[in-house]
Each structure stands twice: as structure tokens, then as C-alpha cells.
Length: 423
Image 1 (spheres, rainbow, N blue to C red):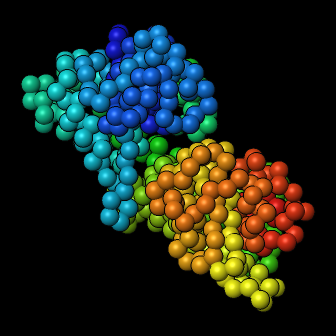
Image 2: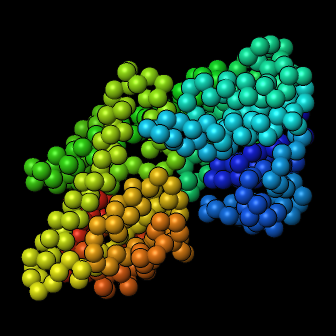
Image 3: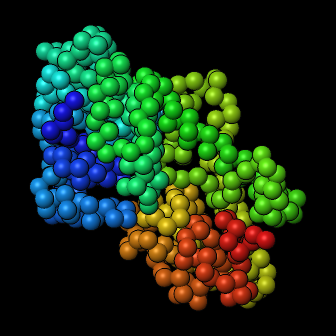
């Protein structure tokens, strides 16, 4: 198939790199986002997110006339929907953004167009998206009613990229292509082959939706095992980092590393989408989520104990005199993304419960926003170490790994990532 114009709905951490990669292949790309500031920034050839090399690709694409951003959908040959899928209520998936995107692009659809849902979604979301579009365009036919003969082709093609390596992985990783019909799958595979060097593996829409959820639930379960081990080892006075290192010498054992919890827009969210569809059956997946969701509370208790130990060693001081420095706010090392970050949740609770000064060190951001702004101070590493009494290591950024243990001898340390505790 020939795709002369491609529209990407949602210009965030996935949508903008995807739009930029298509544009770098000399395709006309129209990016759509509800944020006027983001749209203006992109049209100036700049970016509003942090991702290595993306600024270069976007600047070239805009300058050469292949990429343009707008707040209102325009006609195209293919539409890729990459909008958020957050929670509502008790971990119920909120498809409101997908619904809004569906209704926004419906008026500009024409016969032969392809619509792809890239947003990580619960099983059945692609069919729901197609139903929303059909509701607004009764003059067109869709796969759920006309199968292979439909006017509009619809598919689900989840992304599977690592922040910090998105541009490379978009191109090199295999892609799961899940059409609502074989014809839909073929159209979607043809589109992605414009830039994907990996395999485009064809399946149906429901399996493609479940595949992304399964991948992240598998990782979540493995992390939960490591996090539970860390809690058990702390109770039994065992160094969990040494234990895992020794256990992983077994040729068929590969235990992951524990941490303060699980964050990000995928692993901390996707398993709940499975649970929402099969609550009675997804027992292990739910248990893993509960283990990982409870880990921040354990870190808070360890922090309170560290403050208590400091006060015992300094009886003339009170809790108001104790300065806590939280090292790291991002949901994983060496990125600026704070979404669903356990480090943020822990820092917020320390702010709410500790009467003394609380500092944050996050080398990948320039300023604090939202609930973190105000009483929390953002400091550089050296300044924080100079005044802090308790150090809570939450993210193993490269810059933190260079801090020698020798300068922490006067601090009480809660090391959730094993930077200074591992043998």
C-alpha cells in the first residue's frame, strides 16, 4: 500500500518519536496533540520531552517540511493513536483518551484509510475504538460489521521500546501486528515496514493487545519476586544483593534486582489491565502487583527507622533537625520521566510525614512541578550530601554510582538499589 500522509495522534514519549521516524523516511507526517504548547514547540523544530537524539531528528523533519504538528486532526491515509490509557477508580482502565481520539479523527476518515491503536490497552480496546468511529461515521463500513470488505482498516500494534533508546528500538525491534482482519494486518504491516527493520509478526487484535500486557506482567512478576526476597532478607539479616548474585550463578536462574517499587507507564499499569478483564483468574498477576505496590511503604518504614537511629546517636536533636535527601525521582535510571514513579510517591510521603527539611536530587530535571513543588528543594548531589543526615537512594542514576561509600560514613543510608549495599 502507498501511504502518502501519516497522522500520529498524541505526541508524547511514543507518538513524537514515531512521527519523527516516519518523517525521516520522507513521509508527510501530521502530528496531533491537545497541548498547544507542545504543538508550538514541535513546529519550531524543538521537542518538549527528553529522549536522546530525538531533537536532531525532529528539527530535521520540521525544517525539511515532512513533519507538522496541529491540535486538530486532518485527512491522512493512516492514523496512529498513541494517547494515554490511565486508571480510574480501583485500577480500572480509562479509555477516555482513546474515545476522544476516535471521535476526533472520525470526521476526516475516508474509504481505504488505516487506523492503528498503539496505546497499551486492555483486551477489546481496539474493537471498542472501531465501534466509536463507526458510530460517528455511518457512511463508512468497519471491520466489526463488514470484515475484509470494510472501508476502514483497523489494527492494534503495541510499542515495545525502552526510554532512552526509543529511536533505535522503534527501528530495530520486532513489531506485533494485530489486525481486526487479515487485510487490516497486511495494511498495518505495510505501514510499519516503512521504517521497521525487525520482523513484523502478524496476529489478531486481541492477541496483540494481550501480548503487550503479558510481556510487562511477566517482568512485573519477576520484579515482585526480587522485591519480596529483599523484604524477607532484611528480616533474616541477609544481604539480598549478595544472595541474588550467588543464586544467579545457577545456569537456569536469573533473578532481577529489587528496588523501591515499580514505576513507569507500562509495568506498573499493564498488569492491572489483565486483572480488570479476568479478576478471578489473574491471581498471580494481582499478587505481583500488590507486592510491588506495597514496596514503597516498606521503604518509608526503613526511612523512619534511619531517622530514629540518627536521633538515638544525636540525643540533643529532634526530628525537625533531621534533613532527609531523596536521591532520584525518575521511574528508572538516567531518564527524566517521573510517570508512576515509586520514588516520587515515596518522596511525597516523606514530605507529608517528616517535620524536618526534605531535599531531592534528580539530575535529569531542572525544576520540580505539581505536588513536588513548594516545600521540597531540588539540590545538586554535593549540596545535598553536605547537609543531609539521612540519605534515601531511590534510583540508581549513573551519577549516584560514583558517590564513594567513604563519604557516607556520617549519614544514615537507606539504599533501595544496592549501590552501596551490594557485595
